Length: 254
Image 1 (cartoon, rainbow, N blue to C red):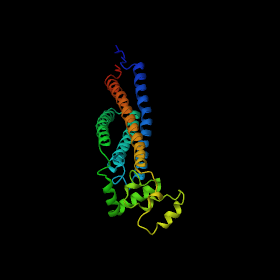
Image 2: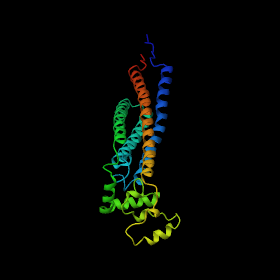
Image 3: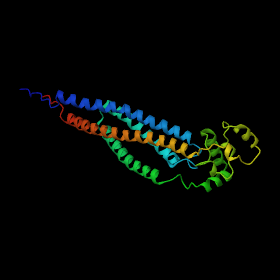
Image 4: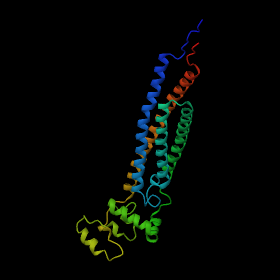
């Protein structure tokens, strides 16, 4: 007498876990896009503040923050690629590792985000003062070049206004005001330029506004990634549990 075949893995179970798998696989696409967005925005910020992040730009644009976001974007892209492979192969061992990596990344991300926000709120741009600005411009060629570039590109002068400078640099010269070009040309052989020929707006707002755009884009993308990873972890745990049951309770044919 033959032993009857007992199927413990029903079609409804198969359909349910396939939906988990498909949903997790689809979530990898927005994660990859968000990882690319963080990488591109960080690259833009690096180019924007490449010479000035330690000298005059706000803390949000400093090199450590840029490096942290570069690393975060790479980790997001690697985890997303890893997840795509796993959810296509249904590998129990690697799926378990993926869940651990995603959980670790999410926890560390929350801790790191809190630390960065505290630093952003309570720190000013290093030990920046008007006196140190004057001294570094005179003594450090890199700093003076940095200031000159920013003032020429953004049409601004000094930190708050041109009055911050004891001797206003030629890079502050506004060629577009009345007689501005004539005054600037006449002042070329002089040590500085008169205040009426300088850009009247300080560079502080330009630097802060660009840093704010950067930090908002990267932070929002980062938060979305954490939320998506939490959903993926939830789906992966249920899928892993189902695959373990399926593996243990295969049909027994007598």
